[in-house]
Image 1: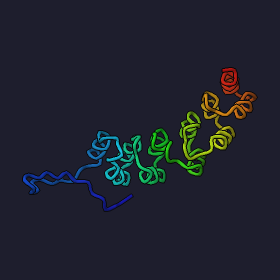
Image 2: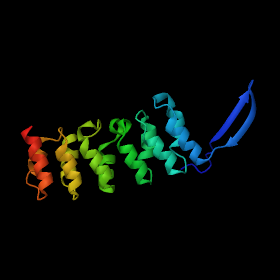
Image 3: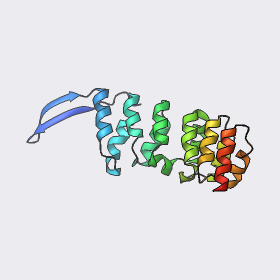
Image 4: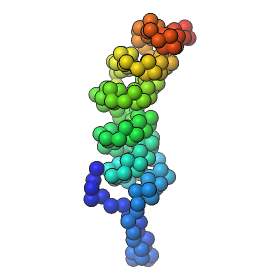
Length: 178
């Protein structure tokens, strides 16, 4: 986080500054939340992704049209809430590397569930490796998300059919029969 980063409201009239005030983290969070979600906004999002308040960074992480630079900054965040929001974004699916996905799967069950639910959509990852890693997860909810995904490789589904958790096994069997 950039400790000397200050977000300010500046109003000018006829090219002359007429008002200036520091913005609270809450105001910045609201601005980020309502700011246009497009690639042209990335200069702002790069800065907001470095804000000290996790609520600001959480709102940046929700955006779908982030550059790889913003995704990189947010993927190193210490806040689980930021990482969970990021894992749900289109930008993350486009930019997440195999190594990053593996790190996040080990870090948090909810993130692992999100990844399992869309294992095929990570453009820079190997779907077979990712699905195999997820299939070894200890939490049955992650395995259920993987089993429910229509894009999970059949090889992985076949291993989940024999899982001791009846829900996981039933979901895997249902996908194989579809």
